[in-house]
Length: 252
Length: 138
Image (tube, rainbow over all chains, first blue to last red; front, side, top):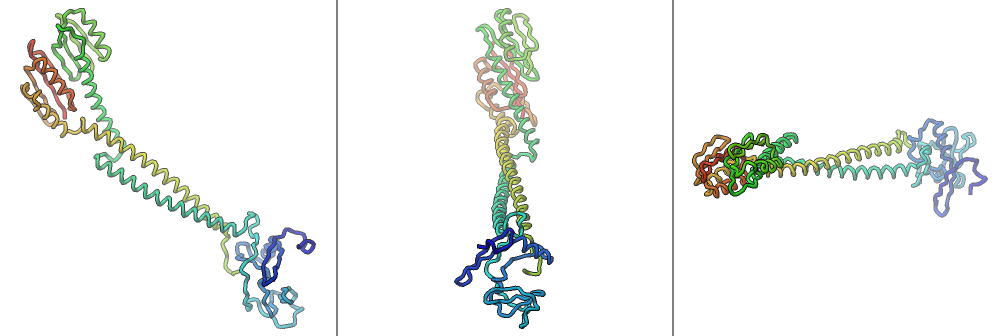
């Protein structure tokens, strides 16, 4: 549509319905920014940009714009040198403008190749994500407090000390007692299950720092049989036979 | 165009993105903490049960004392008591004139109970009779 009319350059296009007509605009984003920059306005200072054709379409009196004047010539807004206008003019500040609903989607931040709207949409999404994560953090904090409270209640119930080292020490102490006591019983049972003949019997048995016991033998030669039996499960430190009696000493 | 300085929306987006990164970091950190504490809770539950059981078996002095007294007063053991000595954390029992059949029952009774045995001694008094010495610890 604009081919051959507009000078060479990269253009953006914009359409606005005005009453029964459609107005088409071609504009060079970079040129607008450059011009604004030339008069000391940074892109970050720009809120919205409107085509003069739309912003000033209802003006009746020419409006001063620096050393130029904007006039409405049968619906077309034209910028002319001030010297050409002889009629009364109004200052821009005195003019009450009715700005169009939509502004030009100016690629103000073209280096990022994304529009301002897109940035705002992205920001809204990010904000919603922040909210969602914040809610999750809040829920986690509640969960954490609940778990810690359960731990404390459990420690109180079982009278556990505060540090895990102390808890481990208690457990190790109790496990040591259990090991000693069950070991003692196991060894005693093993001794009492010695393959004695009907004529043989245990004459004494003592458990303390060491285990000692004596067995009345029917034949001293059977001591060897008992030795083989006992060393399978006991740590025998001494063994002797006197007067048909076997004397054994073991470690606990 | 207003006179005031507008903040570059990109800066706002970047700031929000930074906040999001911070919140995600916090979220992961606290999620990890919850996981660790839940794991610790399971460990405490496990250890507490073990300690409670072991204490009940061997560690609780009051329960140990009750069990020893119950043993001493049981009809299997009581008839053979010669004497007993006790102090704050030990109970020493002297049994005598036990016949071979009852000796097994007495030994079974003692060694099948959850009592802490410090020492045990068994001697033949005669061909028929046996004596025993048992030291219980609380």
